Amino acid sequence: MVSFEDASGANVSKNPFFQAFDPHEIGEEELDEYLHQPEKKRRLTTEQVHFLEKNFELENKLEPERKIQLAKDLGLQPRQVAIWFQNRRARWKTKHLEKEYEDLQASYNSLKADCDGLLKENDKLKTEVLVLTDKLLIKARGTQNSKLSNASSPGPPENPVACSKGEEERISTVPEDVCPGKSEISDSDSPNGGYSPLREHGDSSYAFEPDLSDSSQDEDYTRNENLQHLCVFPKLEETRDDYPILSTSSCHFGFPPEDQASWPWPY
DNA sequence: TTGTGTTTTATTGCCTCC
DNA sequence: GGAGGCAATAAAACACAA
Image (tube, rainbow, N blue to C red; front, side, top):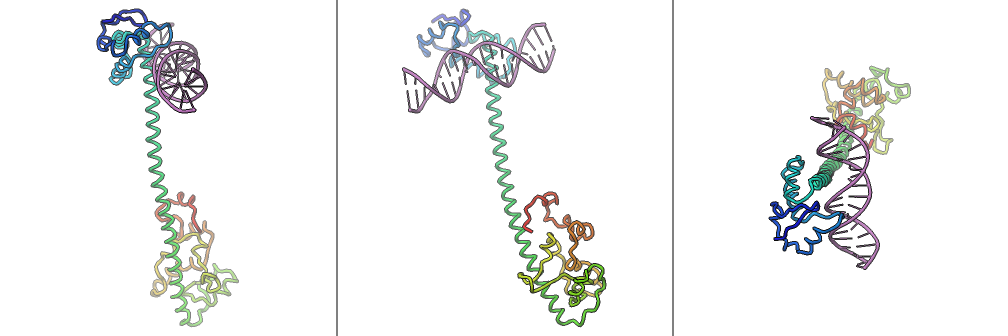
């Protein structure tokens, strides 16, 4: 058995580590080189590294006693063992950070995919709402027109306050039923076959109001209140306060208003 | 063989804790 | 104030393509 010394010249042949490894495995030349290198940096043997790795797995911090024991077992300076553990902790930390970064990135990608899907679905639903709203409007107008043709002269509006002079002239042909005191419902002049207050308003909620074309006299007041939205288009800010039914907070498709503010609404 | 990039060992300086 | 840890860095050792 070869008796070999560590860098400090101590005989290490009796320690467990050196008893464990066979000099023939690493070759005599290699061993000789290992033992007689000058003060140059020398790499630890694979066995030494293995041994250190095992110990690192058990505990990545090094108490003084353990450091001395390991140094003895490996035939190294305690300082070398300490340095190895220090560098090993640094490597572990780097790897750990890389893994954390990858995990976070995967998580982000997954969330982003979900978000993109929801955005697409939301756009689709908004388009659908628009189409259905227009259909409803056209249907409602058709019902009103048929009533119009059967009705006698409408008389003065009940509540003319909200209409401008010019509007009053135009609405003289619009029945009270449709627009009590004011009306902006125009007609076939528009390319779409009619003006859509919805688009002007930037709010589609009113499209889901109940069909008011056929209601009793007792319901007229409520109905007329609602129909005012068809005839008068206050500024959006006013609308929110004065007409809760139109307020943006009352119809935001389940999304909080602040979210909608940033959405690219098509109208 | 050599140039170059990567890995490993070791040092330095700063910080924290006892 | 000394011991030990950590980040930054130097430098040797190693791997590998051209």
